[in-house]
Amino acid sequence: MAKQRMIVTDDQLLIDMELLFNAIREANGDWEKVEKEMYQYLASVQAMAQ
Image (cartoon, rainbow, N blue to C red; front, side):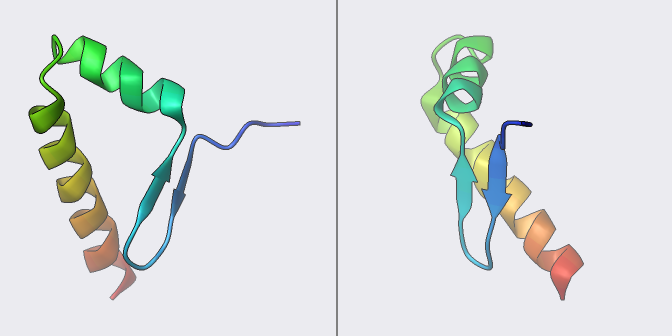
């Protein structure tokens, strides 16, 4: 069975912890950068849904 990595709702991103921590590692520990990118991703998905 395929593993869900991300679920997008109207106002939330539900993200697999592995994805989140990998993103933080790739950003050299800059969790604020990853947070900003996640909010931008949510905003772009919300714009597509409208």
